[in-house]
Image (cartoon, rainbow, N blue to C red):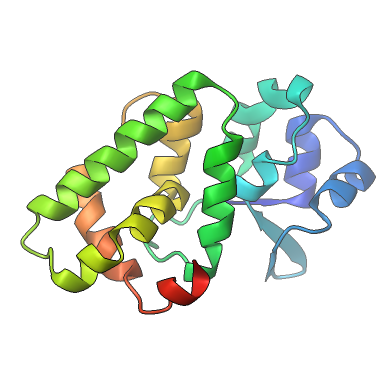
Length: 165
C-alpha cells in the first residue's frame, strides 16, 4: 500500500510542506509525476496525537491487491513498523497474523527447506502485504491467511534475505 504526499497531507490534516518534511527520508517510488510512499513507513511519521488519522491514511492509500511481491530490501521497514505499532490490539493482530502465516506455510504442500530457511524473514515481511497491513492497523475481518501465506512465501522467497537481514 502506498500513499502520495497530497493524500498524506489531506488524511492527517497537515500542510504539504509538513508532510514533505516528514516524508523526506522515506523511500519512495515515482508514479507518473507524483511520489508514492509505502504506507507502513508513512504511518511511522505520525505524531502520537495524530494516530486518530490512521484509518484516513489507510483509506487514502493505493493498493495493488494483485501484487504479492515485496522487495527483500523492505525487511528493515517491516521490522521498524512492527516495533512502531502504537496499540496492544494492533500488536495482537500482528502476532496472530504472523503465527497463522507460519502455520499456513508449514501445512502447505509448497513448504520446502528453502522456504523454511527464510521463514523468519518472510514472516516479518508478511505485514507489508496490503491485506495484512490493513487488518493489523484497522482490525475487522482477517485476510484468508491459509490461502495467502503459501503464495506470499513462494513469491517472496529469495536468497537475498541473508544479505538484507
